[in-house]
Length: 127
Image (tube, rainbow, N blue to C red; front, side, top):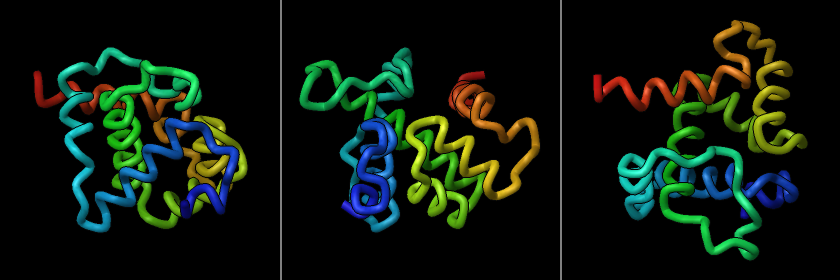
């Protein structure tokens, strides 16, 4: 509800991911969606249909978006995450817009490489 009032047109994956981040930060269980994603990680991060239009949105999708946005929070901090929630762009363009607006210019921190770095971090415990 907080995200909806700040950016009502946000993509489903970011809206639902931020909902789970909020639950986690407030001490509530996210229901194991992160574990579901870890067991089935071969799904697209940003390709969610409308939740009402698709029966294929699963716990894995929620877990993946939660873990990506938690990674964003851990990497860039609360002020950047709060700015991302408020950004009027949607999806990965809002990530890029937020980083640009905050003058985060390290090439490793641009949105086009952020999902790739995040996915590699997910594989590190397996190596």
